[in-house]
Image 1 (cartoon, rainbow, N blue to C red):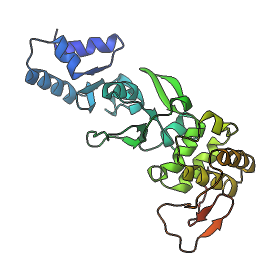
Image 2 (cartoon, rainbow, N blue to C red):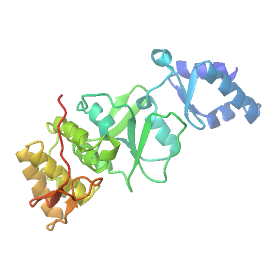
Image 3 (cartoon, rainbow, N blue to C red):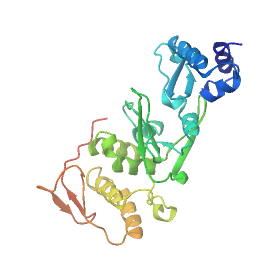
Image 4 (cartoon, one colour):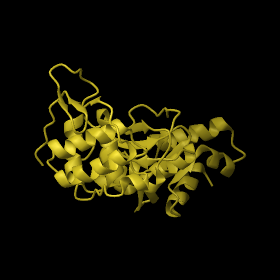
Length: 266
């Protein structure tokens, strides 16, 4: 059996993802150079793609025309290959939750440090935090198994904390408005939901809920939970990328309003 035939047989068996190590184990008589040459030729024929060094994906027929396999197809296996915890986050998670009115150009993934170095032209947007809050993740079936993504509350908090990855606070607020039908803040402190995010993030989200989205009910719930974990609120800027020139203090949330947030038309 040739490597090409081996790859094809894996596809038939429903195993379209494999590593370089698996190929070397299947073909112990071949040298590393021979294996690499074979995989290169198979890739040139657009039969497989290599999103990460040593990690290969058989291109399914329904993606063959574009020659690009979306990360959602292989992300769970890739993170297992990298031995990293993860979840799909930000706009990509919002899309899975039905709250992104535009398909994100990049596929956002949250994991832990150290940073991951991907191949050029990758559509993966990596985000990092010290640990993964598994209790606030959801899981659904994908074409190749299961995938993990942030629930609505964690997604909303991440959109604020990592707003530079989604195009700014206005874009974040627009998506949070769509998420608001799913978010429930009552009991968030007791559940530990606020712990993965900074207190500043919760304050900024609360200000946006109350004064931009005019969602008084959720703002009130979040304020109660915030005061449970942080009775005294320090002062923070609404936008971390602008100074305080001309800003106005929102006393309730102790936020210096130094930027204007506009909700996109849906």
